[in-house]
Length: 372
Image (cartoon, rainbow, N blue to C red; front, side, top):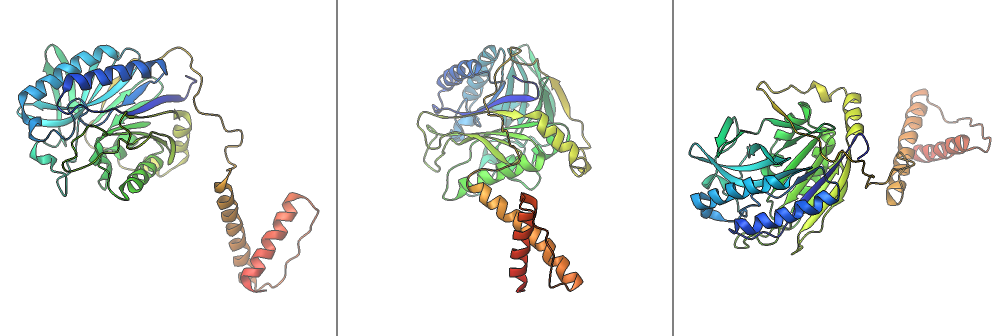
């Protein structure tokens, strides 16, 4: 992978509701495919090891134990890449909706969901406790790892953080704090249902948050196989960069969905430095835990994304909108000046070149707007 880029994947797989071992196999096979594509970090849907719509069965110790056992087996399949996998996890009598970060054969951390939806068709507080303020060190079966949402993961060339589904929809998402603390990427395992017009709104949230944070944002939503008693899930996947969708997977697919893209980390960091207000946001008063993961895929990989020879020149339908906007800006500037000096005429030296031609066209448009 060229320096300054990170290959990120968002994956939605068919879920086998309550069949943890079958879900484990689906994820394991997906990891093998992603490794051949040179993916460095991949995010899977919320509670993907059990299924999101398992209801009160999530409270059963058997389900929780099987999910934990599957997670321990899955970590052996993360050599050379990082995977974010969802599961219910019980600690000190409280059940958390967690995203496990696996890399290089280890469980690095469990990130609990901070904000639990509890209205309309969602009632997560029936089963889960909020992860807000949780900073625990868990020791289980000879493994030790943190349980905390305030965690950043450093992978050599980039830093990422994790938030889960509803966390994105609140007024001040955890990802905002994570970005200010240094996260270049946000990975979001989600189970957001499909409703009329909801996808456009959700996609707008992803675009705006990635743009607001000058960050990459990978989103993996639950899909086929979840119970349809109360909701339907479309399996949407997407990778965004600074407000722009780099890759989006197919919705409503019974075979799953995949979005893979190379995120320009160098460009994002440059834009953060240019924007003076980004670093004016107050940092968290509590400590952020930083974990250093071994970088993945040391071998050079060609970029998946094309390099734009004219990055500031739009094409297609966007070009017309951009040019019209530029003309509007120039016209307003000239109209304001003419109004201020009470001018009714201008002198334009037309040489036949592009600059003077543009000046003449703008003058004509401005005079039309002023009725002169």
